[in-house]
Image (cartoon, rainbow, N blue to C red; front, side, top):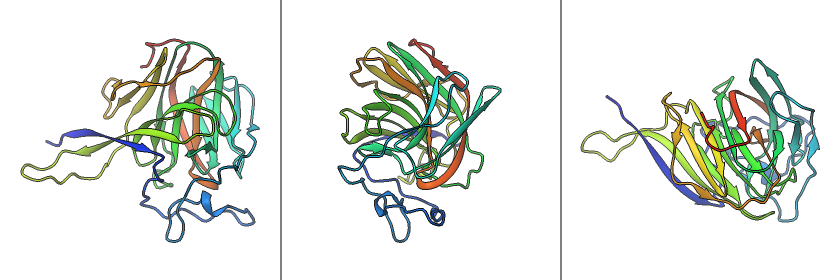
Length: 266
């Protein structure tokens, strides 16, 4: 019998995750700054210049449970989204939701008070770039450098809870990976070989709790709550980033919970 263990890692302004795939080239004629490129044989994504900003761009009206759509940080290729039968298909470029500013496509609504967010992620092409991520985001504004806290599932299966405590500040996160327990008498663990089936985040006052279902079990809290001060109103919703500055990838998010109360993550 193979057992699975959840391993937590805490990182502060950590570098981009190692990649198992070489990212595709940028579209012809698109000028991508070197700092925005992810890991490859010749490049490594690094923080943008301290004074670099790009305005966010309205990218659609109400969709499903959300009031609006925005390309946060004005990615080099525009994003889009559609909703059918409660499943959201989100297309986005963007170099990251990290460092001191973000680029991603965001479906949002504006609320105050407590919040429950959850969703099930499906990757249409599992061979696409592994560090893309779907995020359940709670942020002060639609600015590219807004204060925020989020739960995110990466294309490689890693889940984290991450936050930017101050506007234009760095991100901090706690990462969770599932790995096979070591064989008896060894310290060797195998690689993560599956994706969580569902994840969520709950705001209860200034306490934010990550929820995960690793293998189809009922959603359960993972790790301790994170304290993050909010004054509201704020934006809550679902975002997606390809982690490739000018390359649009796709994710599908279904069975979305977005409720203006705590205790509704399911």
